[in-house]
Image (tube, rainbow, N blue to C red):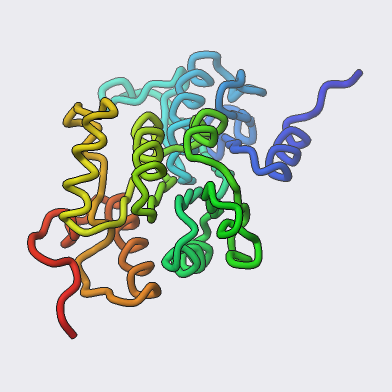
Length: 272
């Protein structure tokens, strides 16, 4: 049986929404040489030197994780420091990332969920809505979601939590301790880039007591929680709140300094 070519593997991974990157030499020795990279798989092809292949594959996986494409420069054996590149040919490699869409998992089939799912879809997220209450977690209520699950949080994290990365978000919109505590506990054990939890400052303080009882005591994990959720823009309606949440997700991902509700004081909703 003939092994699939690099292009066939690239095609198949793109069709099935599996992350994959294609590295192509565009300047220097071996112009046109290609290397196909994918998470947890050996690289396919070669750029002309084994050490160059190793270094480029490492860098390309990092670019794929971030969903970025661009040109990177190396020496013929993968040199990257300015000193190593003196008096040697430069190899320019175009790293083309085919990352899956970022995911947003929304826990709680509440009034705010539909608005958040709509805004997230506009931003290109693959949206999953999860709630244990079958009567509320329905396709009719959330037609904009890619997936509506009737489930408790932990089974979803156990089965698919490893899929979450820095480009993804978990938003917990329920106030039910039986649901939000396990959702938070599941989220902090993943590599997800954003964890937002809805509720007033008073509600979150009580939630923190329950989380401590459940074993969440490490400051580094607690600091990942954005609660109250969203930026402090005076949002009042579900639609405005959804924009506030998504704006905070963007700001956290890009490293911008913005007024998050978590870092403020007083009521999270001001009088009109």
